[in-house]
Length: 191
Image (cartoon, rainbow, N blue to C red; front, side, top):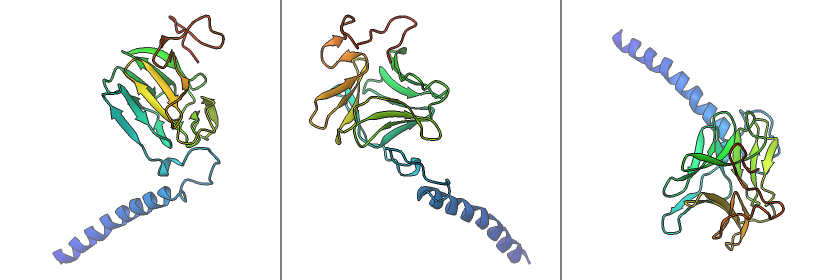
């Protein structure tokens, strides 16, 4: 009789574990999450993170198809520069704990931030509607660099900078008189 009780306990605990395993498998192949949504980035279940820290170069490289979800971040090798997808949805770049750039339109709405396969950075809401983009698409092989110097830069595959948050790569702060450039100041973050 004790043996039978043991078998029953095993079969009761086996069923929930089987359901969890089956749910995980279905979610991984996209069958449990409902209808597919067209998006330029992979689904959450198939997104891989390709992050390389290079202390010598002073930057962390984030490759295409990597993403941040709420509460996640990428940082420079020394930790001084952090790109954070905050729990409130806002995508913010911090340098030494001070917000220096934000993806405008993500506060309260942002759910994911992608480095897309076409080279574009994109912030999306839960329904995969784009909230913000870097407009660097059509550059397969491009990557994002989070730099110790307080900057994030999208580079083409050959290393040429395409977009940067606040500082021109290798030159320091942007020229505030340059049309189209934004100079961060108190209570004003660059888009």
